Image (cartoon, rainbow, N blue to C red; front, side):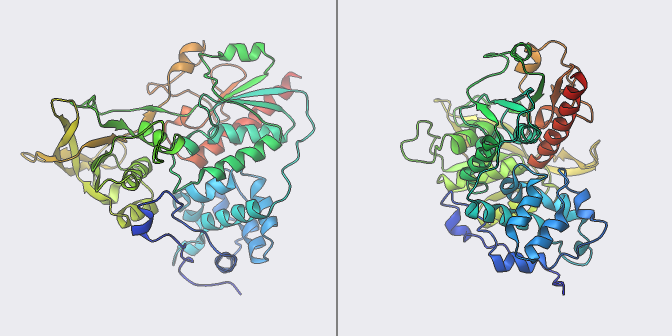
Length: 462
């Protein structure tokens, strides 16, 4: 009999007032009993609406059925057919707007906790697996991947499974892209990312770090080196700023810089080579998942007051509901309907405050959201000694500026068709380099699509 409870099994978590002082993972994961009980909520629908909501088309009812049967390894193998990074996706995917939003159990209650079950299965496999994946027989063809983030890793994994000799070229000293520099340890432990990358290496994928495409090597040189097709998954790592007075003061960071220092370079450890200014009052400008990550990281670094400053209201926050709830529980202060107009500093060019105005919501804009407008005579100052700008990112222009014939749009994103093909033959692209900053799973979906198209392209030439 199915479990007809209207509620998901709760995810065990660290106590908020304990976790806001450490970088250990917040969510502790389901036990086997919780996972089986949650799996029994699935009705195993014949038309599988949840699969249609998954960008990488995991056979969700099939893997959940395996959990019901306590065949956890079997469940993992089903997920692994479609996803190269299941332990990652189970933690950071916005399932509530994707697969879970299509679940029929959500009509009269809460949907099945698909993301939590995916995490459970991946963690169970990683804890019990004794063998690495086997490298497939080579088909004699070579592909190059630019960027070791979610789209690049996925594309590389799928091509490797087809027998291609795949090399990933990564600009940083560690593979993982946004998974290692952007998402904090308390949401995504870096060992999990490292384990997933080791699985790809076992398939034969080579990873070359500290290689900046456009400087160390140019794309045209990759073709001269024998690579028959190239995938660009270089992400969108160029931070945007508001261009208001005071953004050049000491104590102003982009969220990218702040999180890279924290996550990739471990600035929270004593004696770190890249310390972050010891701040007591921090303002994070923005309302997305990255803003939540920056605010929650600042709290863990010892800040007494951390403010999320967002120009729309709480209901318009683009961050995941779970991340907002966790931030509130941890003591993050939300100053919504607020917009900065100037960052204030002292004679030493250190941040001393942020001048803001109150906002109200007017008529909907082009995106369909109500446009924020300034309230007259509403100026006020928030006393802060650190400001973190988290208002979006753009692709770095280096690749497009050093590769002839690559078309981009007005935002600097590469233009690619539905298969990931750019304006250059043999060059494909996906993820944030094409869409601008988006989700991990959408980037992975683009990597999968491009891998299939690259295979067809190379086959057509041989």
